[in-house]
Length: 386
Image 1 (cartoon, rainbow, N blue to C red):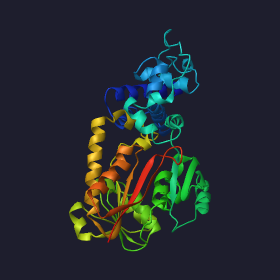
Image 2: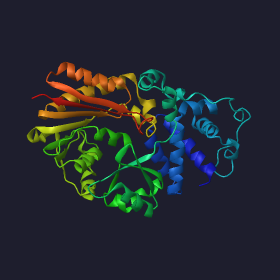
Image 3: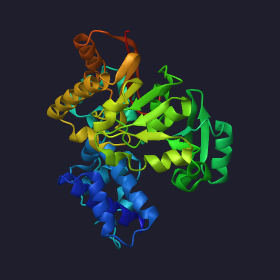
Image 4: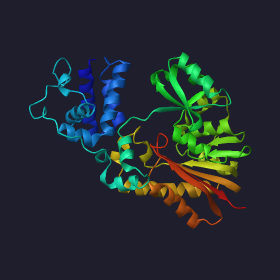
């Protein structure tokens, strides 16, 4: 595909999204109808679409409309590129610009316009520099890896990845974390990944896990395990027996093979079997949330979130805390995590739980943001008395 044809494909996907189709579904629908598109073409179209979604309102203002064509026109202007060089009408490129479309706005909008109005204050209240935070959401988040320290040192992994075309570097922010700076798409073929020596895991998550005093022995339950990334990290750092559970067991489908690659044992437990394995020395709850800390990776999330949806999420978070607390043994630990920047999903949920459940105390709580780590992430550790 030519560069212009890739722009046309992104326009079609964005129009599908504007029509109400989830972006991943829209991308899949386009790819199925574009058998001629190679892997580099599909990756380029995906990048165009996600870049536009991160700055959807800015793109609309710079492009003079909210359809896919206007959004891509606006995106090119925001990137400092001349749209006329790609909107040529040649081959499969978009049609040339009209006289009105050729007139660019004199000034780019403020990054805060790319945050829904009702979310700007709750998000900006969590940082000292809201403008920098809003600007950070315009850019793609880097890929971070967690090194399995039972298997290798970070320095050895950096060398192994380099031999397979992946450039990575260590960080003083976390001993287990590597930032991929080049060759991201070669990772899945790299020996370090295939052998389970590294797993993709965001820096903010690794830092949150570091802040918790996990038991070295006993039993730890990852209550909302999802794909199992945190269970794998716990198995690397503790000799405790690790259990994984998810309300939707299908989310854990790949956990068995991933654990085998990493050389660890993780026991998956259905909801009906949890009581039989309790009490646990620690229970981790990475609860469903707004995802406001991950808007760089999933920009669609900020546009589909509504106040009603947020209220429902908070109710779910409360229910999960109560259910998980019942599984914690005497003097055990309950760990609550979200990838949210919103106080209503974080400190407010912890305060509400403590107010209703005497016998628990807060050990610590804190958050990272895209300005201090990579994603926004919140973690609170509670302990049961006696």
